[in-house]
Length: 519
Ligand code: FAD
Ligand code: SIN
Image (spheres, helix red, strand yellow):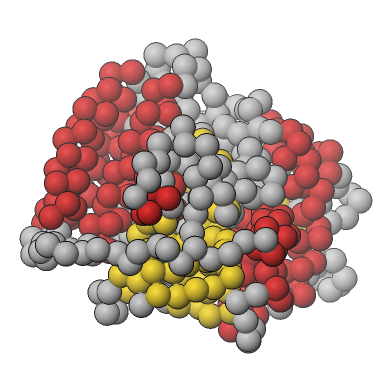
């Protein structure tokens, strides 16, 4: 099938849905989502969204906290713009129908605090903020006449001049995006989607690692597509590990224990029940995430254990049950009563700070291609993202990109010369083990060699092993009918390659990139 549309959006998390709502008054919009519409990191966000809403706080403080967490390499202009725009984007979310918790008087938002924040400024909906945002935005999308949301459509590759037979390299000056090829996961057909403007909002790549809080859809597809299309990618060495995922090895994705719990008073303890964060940072359990995750990693290695404790008991029964109902219920299911028992936690891959490089209008290096949300790299996070700045960044950049895309679309025509996907001569790969085993190997390599603490030797080993996996998988890809698992595996390999390459190139310990061979 061939589709033509003004605005094509890949991804139905906060970034994709926010963008779609904003461009919809100006043309037809198609949103492609690789699974169910609500399945993405957005739905799992617990803590909330950071914004300065009252004068008890200030933009300057939020800016300073973001710059400190980013370890000196944030783009200051981007930080200032994003944080100053935050209250307006929050008001919009509320207008779309998203509910945030109010204080007891019902007149002000109830604000939480998380690691690295000097003030209480996290708007939230209990401990399931993301699910509420996703619900509100999907309700607004579903009632919009100009938006068609198509589930189970897997975008495979961006369409550029390459598909018109031209040679495209990373030095080609005017790479142009005409849309995407996408696999219809119900019919197994590969459809052609042509658009004036395309937005990538494909989320993160946590599944490059064995243990991740991100859902199974987070396989770095947008980043890998831009890599293959020769676009510019940045800061991928900064993979953020959340310090406190619930230790429950069989569970995928790993269940998160929100940082807001530490904001409310929960304390990290070693397996003997002793506090240890004073050895690492004066901000203790509320230090920025990179520092806390490294401290936990070190303590686990010293003691030779797989998890440590988070002690939330001092918060009080009522506040725990009312304020963290999802976590309370989840832990109880596993026999852990968080009002009485400590919670077993360990770090898990959580958020990719780098991604598709975009400017302040959300433009990527490829013409007519925008990116927003976790797949993008705006410069806001620098070396390490401040908690709850991610949903905020997605909302702000979806807005900026939409403003620009509407203008650009007015002078753009759809390129009809694009050929359909050619699958001739391909055979169906019947051995799933070729994909599943390779994925496991990839995740183990990344976890053991390219995790929280790195070294030159570990990175080189990872690189050499990845090379073999890459060659085998490309060989399989070249002779197989394309399937979602195979395509995701290629994307994970591309992302792993980019993380390793960029980690090797970063010759200084900064933010989330930490190597024992560097200072
Ligand atoms: P996502 O919400 O991940 O959506 C990605 C979309 O892209 C999905 O619809 C998916 O189907 C689609 N997609 C991907 N690839 C393809 C493809 N090839 N073809 C078609 N569709 C595709 N951040 C905060 O600021 N505050 C928090 O409290 C917070 N808590 C978090 C808790 C957890 C457990 C996790 C995992 C993350 C948390 N984060 C939080 C981070 C934040 O939730 C995400 O960064 C953010 O939601 C990403 O939104 P997004 O729109 O970019 O992508
Ligand atoms: C959390 O709730 O701890 C996650 C917040 C975030 O990732 O920003």
